[in-house]
Image 1: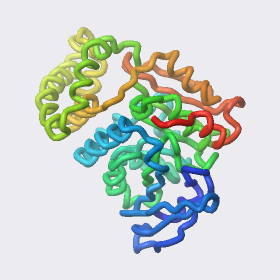
Image 2 (image 1 turned 60 degrees about the horizontal axis):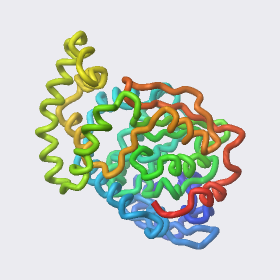
Image 3 (image 1 turned 45 degrees about the vertical axis):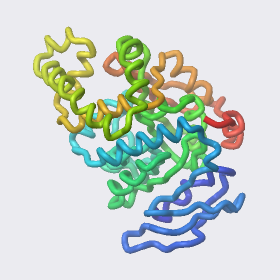
Length: 346
């Protein structure tokens, strides 16, 4: 990590300020090995491999959350390479109803940063500083992909106990992450205080509307695939990817046919992508122990529960929700209040 990001971080336990108590920057500005000390509670957090490990006590997490982090960590380290043009196309879709250009000049939170592709694109679109947070070993791939960018800091942290300074960020996004938490609303409530009063939060979430086939046919299969050894599942997903790629290329090349196909709009969107990216998407859908398909009412309730409002919402390709959320006057008074309200282990 670079010390210029310390003003954006905070103790995940008491939200106190953090100071570098051990370690020194290397030639590229990163402190690769060291310690951060909380000025409030005195807790010490290690820096290993250039990444601050700002995690609360592991007893605050459930076995289900640890397994989710483990499986996604495996995915993002296995699929850590990416094609920039493909990822611009993906993120631009997931970022609606906002535009990637809205990131220009802003201090940005990437909540659930995976292997760092979105942080790279945020900088490419003008973000001044980006903090990426993830719970599992995905942070290793994310740091490797962003180490060369002085605008990016990767942190190992827990969305339920975010190690983020209150009001420090102008903007945030969480793309395909909150719906994999046991309680998505708890995750949003915990993250919201990190945004400034005039900030905004772009969310992308699985939708319930338009996903009947997944809800009633694919989800029972996912309950099995989410328990398979990851190496075996990755191999099996190669076979599953072949018909998806063929259908996607047909839907993209012949729009009239695509319109008649189940999930035709989604398949047409997948059509230009290479086999490896589609393989990663299929694998991503198959490995998750938790996946909530949220109705519009669920999304509205989640945002309102944090004292926020929805400025705009889009039913993307008829199967997912893109949400532009903004703080409201009813937002919680302090990060401490939010922590107290969510409580418990999950």
